Length: 439
Image (cartoon, rainbow, N blue to C red):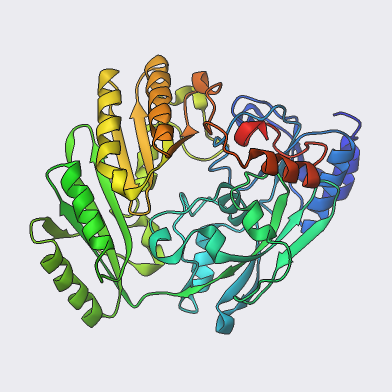
């Protein structure tokens, strides 16, 4: 290790929490030296300070479910695990807020909240493994975003450890908080490049009394787009809306309602009146406490099942991946033309594809095929989407495509982002090279 005695780390954390890194700890092909697991945020901040002073590169890790997102790091010396920093610190149920440590899994948090009839209105991937810090760093949200907003709308306070060892706190424990620098929104989606999240404070929502899902079949993408826009322009009080497309099946659209039984009956009747030409069927039912595991609302997670890899860092083998998964962003009015674009480019390279699009204009595209074909399809799609004001971010790809930039063409905000990075992490200690434009 560069200028950092391992004995110092073992003395600080205990010998069981400073371990040699194995090949399974590699981050997109880059092998670290050590895996360290502090037990408190103070210990984490001290480890980060020591590593920063020694010129080491630190890779933060929670559950490891999304460690393959982004670009390969320029280097990796330490994996800094938050697995032991995992407590629910304060549930102010009367105020609908909760303070939780970064290593707590989403499922554990939801189970705690459910005891008081509350929830974090969020449906990320792999909630049983994904941690709060990791979900925030990757800004991972699903279909519930349509009704409850993104993570930046749900987080109201955060504590992060900066590379110099400072524990910086911003926000508060009340829903209405506008004072100070908006650090919670800044670190959400920053992929751990600005600081290591140690605590977060969220606004909460009540668990619904009942839920009801419907699936609607349409003949083609044009009809699907018309259906989605009609629903969005209506008075329906739906909380989630998503559409499925693939190379070998007709489109379908899922809609989710929450509320009382009487209210759900009224919403169901309104839906059928609004969309008389769609083939509407009741989807398999839903338990509010386990929303993300209910078909069809686990469809986003199922896209990853085409890969032979298990979505956990300790079991992830990039060489086994024969598919690419990308996040696409478009205008909802461009839905049909985007599906046609994906169909045309994928078919021209004989690449099977599946697409899940949310009514917000965010979607997840799965492509299967050889390395060369995947590279050609991703390159062509990104170029065409960016021409129309959209984007394509690669979330998973085979090891042979690690050199393919995950993020796409940099935006005008990159100089500002680099300035913030330099201000908070001047030595480039945290995740160098993993984020947009080499940040």
